[in-house]
Length: 265
Ligand SMILES: [Zn+2]
Image (cartoon, rainbow, N blue to C red; front, side, top):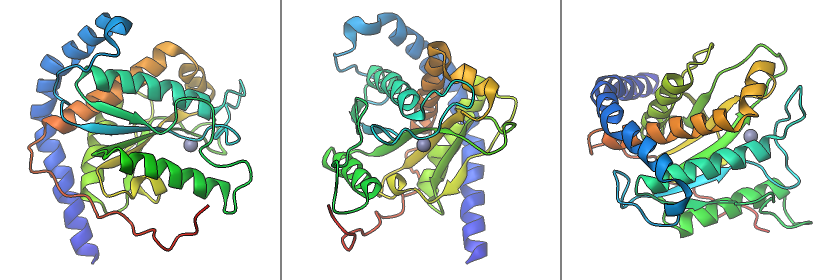
């Protein structure tokens, strides 16, 4: 089993390395200019459905946490992860729409998706309702936006997670990680990693982006500026474009986790 998993990882990694070289040229010539043009066009065309490399795709953008659940807390400022997540998610949604994607957001304001006093765990109901929005929209990709924290203050750098052992998620996460590193030039360069997250188990290419560490004073200060959050969103959008430019024969995602036996609220 180990060998099979290892070769699948190697295959995905090699595929990514080889194709990213072609893709990055493409993205530099086409994607970034298009992103720049999109930014110039700005708000006046925000509601129009653009034609672009992501036309025909529905992408779910999930702003982590919300409402009672603030997520990580800025160590210096007390800034809440939920607010920063939503801001990056809105910026990313706009950029993806400018590239032709249909976007569905799991939340658009400061609220959790659970009831005040649900019969099941609030967090579980919140996740179930996010999943229902994504599934009802028929989204072909999930991008979940988060900020990291750690007990020590020295940890920093964006990091993208994919569903453990899912080759499709790994490919997407690799493209996003490379774009984040290229765009943000973090002092600590991380690699995409596998993880166990509810939102990544819906059977489509999915990635959870930890944009940076709110427990690191320098990165917290960056993440609190709109300019840096825009750069994060641009990086994620470029990663999606790079993924899109990869050969059409992408590895299949693992099937959705069967959650029919899960308690419901
Ligand atoms: Zn989070």
